[in-house]
Amino acid sequence: MSFKLQQTKQCKNCPWRVDSDPYAINGYSLQMHQDLTSTIADPGVITFSKEIRAMACHNSTDEQQFHCIGWLVHQLGVGNNIGLRMYLRNCENASEIEVFGEQHQRLEDTLPNEECETEIDWDD
Image (cartoon, rainbow, N blue to C red; front, side):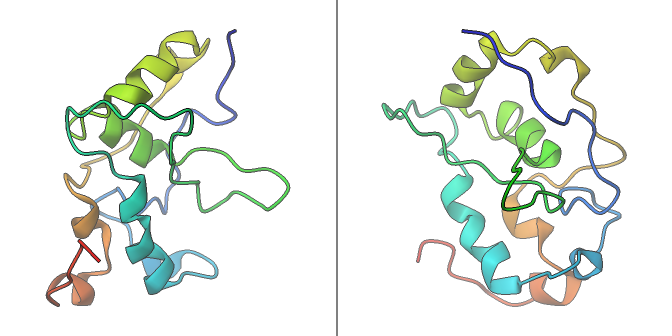
């Protein structure tokens, strides 16, 4: 069964962009940002689950949620999320996915600059 992503272009304020400031996101929550660790796959590990935990775009609403394109590209690339790669095989517009500018290589790096200097236990 094929499907299409609702959004394929990365947002200007996407936290995966090195040049973005997460505090510019309306309603930004540092705690919710830190809680996104559950959306990051162990690189190269196949998880046998019907559910893929995904990071929603900050422009999503309760009524209409869609993938964060920065997260999607990270997980397809250096994040090596094999389950997501398999899921997107049936995506009709995956070739239209586009990010802009330099991207962070780890979720920890997407935190606001002053928070990056703080030691965070990402395994909690």
